[in-house]
Length: 259
View 1: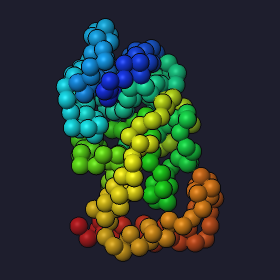
View 2: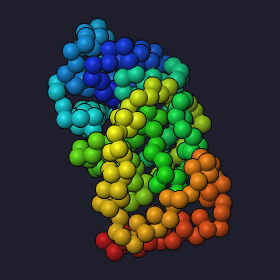
View 3: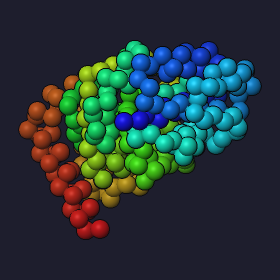
């Protein structure tokens, strides 16, 4: 099992240092390290050159945004799985990669410190996926999935959420959550500075992927109390929610079978 660790960076030299150190300190040797820098001017390139012997591939040039940079990283990857550990994010311990080698699901999602809860169940339901975005810092994704479903670069903050809907709902890829803490999450990313773009992109993606009859059911989930959403198990244990998920699933399967 080989992992491709992809780090996206732009003018975040201190965060890049921390990320690099957490990668090269992994006890597993079954990985390659790829750094995609967006043309930094703060000395980040000098840091990359300092660790150049431990980096399989790196480039520093202007890009068209974070998802363009992530796709560039995937294009260079040779591993079985990819994980995006962007500058400032760090592996929680030196044994993370070693502890995950036995899993072979299409997507394996561990835990992230300083990240909202809600994805700690063994698998994930439609209700979960429609209400949360999985943390890319803890997701090990088979490279072939990222080749088939590259990140949609027209979206600025939710292309990774679109990827999850395409792979886990439409393609029905295998998925597993594990209790291992994979990463320490820095925060302050693009989604937390969306300036109102998040709900706009969310609506655009849903309209792109699903017909109106599906979205009608999705709208029924909107008024649910936020505290209850933090406890997905309670939500899916209610009779109404179980019926909704079943109805939602049957509609999607019907649409897929018609293709």
